[in-house]
Amino acid sequence: MSLAEIQEAIERLAPEERAALREWLDESDPETMAVIRERVRKIKAGEATLVEGDQVQREMRQLARQIANQ
Image (cartoon, rainbow, N blue to C red; front, side, top):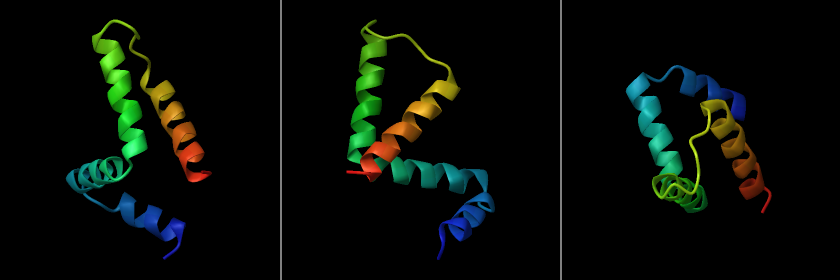
């Protein structure tokens, strides 16, 4: 199955299935989860501020590329 086929299949999923897939993917990547948990900890401790959703998406994509290139 190609990446394009996978992307098309994901687009056909019901919203709750897409959410379950996202959760499964996030949990399957401990490095990503560690970054997310650390960010949340910093926000709760007042060490970081909230950022716009677009910035979060950019940072997560960058992190995913870094992990993929390891």
